Structure formats: structure tokens, C-alpha cells
Length: 429
Ligand SMILES: [Zn+2]
Figure (tube, rainbow, N blue to C red):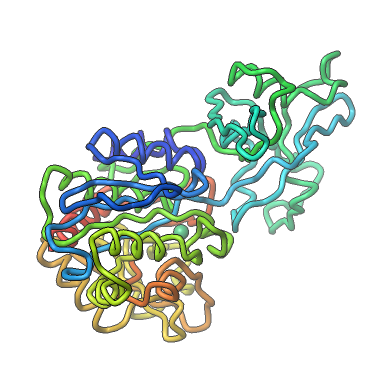
């Protein structure tokens, strides 16, 4: 299963590719794409369908024998995006015969972890068509190392090990080439894209391209107990949800199962494809109506629903014990983590936590709890944002990781297996 996760991560260097990886697996398991511009009537019990938004969010539904209004639904959500750097328009910068690309930070990356790594580009490229309103979108995944952000030598900054303040604009620009004749054109990047996609430079109108680390994930540790890889937050949770959904793909579930992979969690979720969007709420309403019910049926569905908002948690770090709550510090390998926050940044409450703990127990999986050290401000996640449009019972949870938001994060292999088992049980209930 860990090999499957490592492969999943390798196919998914950025949000758009992650959604492609997920939809490919959904289709292999018999899920059919629904076009949201068309009426949704015709869906029936047992149907397996999915919808994408902006090519960067995906919502899969395995419809139950009971209508949504009768049995509600069990939903697992996670996010497709991870901290990275976005390529700016007019990105080429020729300085001293060296070509760099101008970038912009996406999300809360630990920027220093991006130095001295073979990087490349992935995302989507927008191509001209005859229809101005509907250009063509093509995915781009350049697999060979193409860029690198070199560190400054210690000889120019003897204080480097005492902490360095980094500028996003000055320090983080990746190097792409040593200048030769072609570089003066300002079309080097476009030429790379055109060659990769086998299209004409003139047909490239725009792109959403991001940096990613080309080094594949791997197992680490005396007993191979760790997984070290980029984008574990939150693609490991997306992968666990997908595996759990697909394991039951040949079943006829009693209750509807939903998997929602949102985009833009790392920048606050307030986009049309993020958890702050009414898109999922609208989809569920449309499905309820396609099943012959009205808005009251939709509200009955929400009242009976249960959400597992799956986003990674902070595992205990033995070098920084003072950062953790004295009595609640989940450890790697100890199983899925339920997250609590008195200020309600997390959706978990005693009832939803009790439910999820019981799900883990029924799956034979250990379960842990996380609360922030009271003097440390924590992060936020999907659960509460989604609950503002779909006010359902739910829990915020995730597997523990170390080095969260580093270009390469660390998690436990056992936890990943545990999480899939817990999600599988949750969908079965
Ligand atoms: Zn996350």
C-alpha cells in the first residue's frame, strides 16, 4: 500500500495532476464523469459518478440504496494543493548570462527546504481554440529536472546556521539555464512548454505552472517505518480516502459515500473549487432533486450526514518537545489523530470525536488526539469551512506528520494503513 501511495504522489506533483490521478483511478473502478452543465436527472441507486471543478477539485459519489434524503451520506474530504511556487507571467530573468524564472509563493512553505533540489514544472497550459470563451486546457508534467534554487555559500553568510531571513522575491528564484543565443528571445519557457506538449508557441495563451521536487518519495528507517515524500499534506489523506472508496466500488452501499477533494486549502479555501465554495452543496442538492426529492429532502440529508475532514496533524517531534501540549501529543505510528480546538478552528466536538473513535475501534485501528500547546497558534483546515455551507456533524482528523509544509514531509507507513482501514469502515457504516 505504501508503494501505491509513493506512486500516487509521483503522478501528482501539483493539484491539477493529483485530480487527474484520482479521476483516472475512479474511471478504472467504473465511476462515470458527470458534466455539471447538464441536468443531473437519471442518477439512480448504486450509481458511481464524479464531477470535477477547475480541473483541480474532484467530488466522487457512490450512491446508496437509500436515497440521500433517507440515509444522508458519509463524506471524507481532503485537499489537492500543497505549498509550492507559482511561475509568474513574463517569468524569464536574464542576469549575468544566467536565466532564472520569476516565481510567487503559494501557501505556507518552509522555503529553505526548496534550496539545492532538482526541481521541475507541472500544472496546466491554456491553448488557443476557435472558441474564445472555451480555450483548451492541457496538463503539463515535465518529468526531467529543469530548475534548481541554489543556496548562498556559507562563506558569504557566516551566520547562516543562526537563522536566515528569506525574501520570496530575491532568494527563491530558480535557475534554469546558462545563457546562450536563444535565451535573449524571452521565449525559452514557452519553447519548453511547446516542445513538451507538441504545440505551437503562438497557441499558448496562458498557464498555471508550479515548481515541484523531482526526487521521488521513499521509505526510511531501521524497519522502513517512515515515509519521506513531498505533498503528504494532504495527498496522503486524499489517497487514503480514494483507496477506501475504491475498495468498496463493487458493493451496493446502503448509504451514499462521498469523497471530496478540494483545492486551495493552503490559501484559505475561498475559491470556486475550495471548501468555502457552495459547489459541493449545490451538487448534493441537485442529486437530491434528481432522486425526486425537494429542498426539505436536501436538509434531511445534511442532518443525517457525517463528515470526516482529513488533513494531516502534527506528530510529536522529539527535538522540540516544548512546542507540544503536555498531555495530548500524538506520535508517528500511533494511528489517526482527532484534532480539537476550543476556538472551534476544528469541527470536532465530543460527539463527533466519539463517533470517529468508535469507527477506528470497529476497524481495529488505534486512534489519538491532538490539541495545540495553549501558547502556540495552530493552523486551520477544511471541516469548519465546509460546515458553513453543509452544517453536518463531523470530525477533523488526519495522520500525524513531521516537517509539515517542508518540500519533503515525514509520516508513518503504519498510520497510512490504519487510516485506510478506518476510512473503509466509515464508508461501510
Ligand atoms: Zn493540509
